[in-house]
Amino acid sequence: SLTPARTLSAVRVALMKFEQVQSGHRYVDDFVQVCRELLERLEGGQNDVEALLVATRQMAEREAMHTEALRVRIAELDRLHKAAEEEKRLQEERRQATERAKDWRLLENWPKLLARSIPSLVGSKGF
Image 1 (tube, helix red, strand yellow):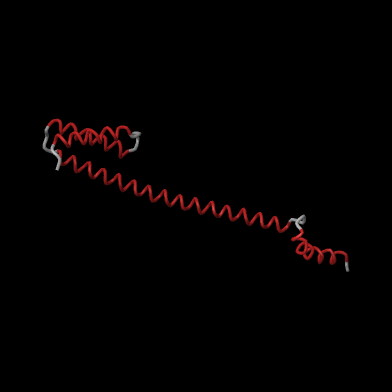
Image 2 (cartoon, rainbow, N blue to C red; image 1 turned 90 degrees about the vertical axis):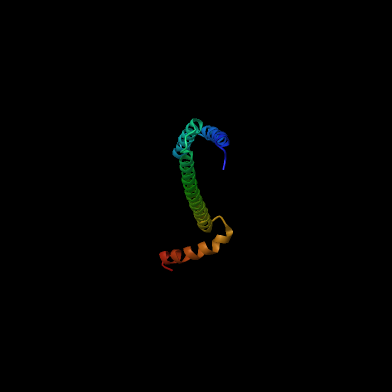
């Protein structure tokens, strides 16, 4: 357990670090507010510092849970993005393969193309 003076010093350092973070995130703003209250109470010598420390710890735990939930969601979105990119790549490969198979300029396609077109040519001429 820290002495009030060391706690005061530690809270001041933590508060300065959090104030340097871009504000606007609700948990960061809440944490800064709790730190300010804690500083006021430590400086005033009041006895309910422990309650504020508990509140600060609970807030930090909520922030950690929120951060973990965001990390999980980001990982899921990343996985979905990679799957969509892979599907897009496979569709493009299939499209290119289909186009190559229909290309009469490629010699390897001539037997298939002739096999498909000869019956219709023969049938249409009445042979």
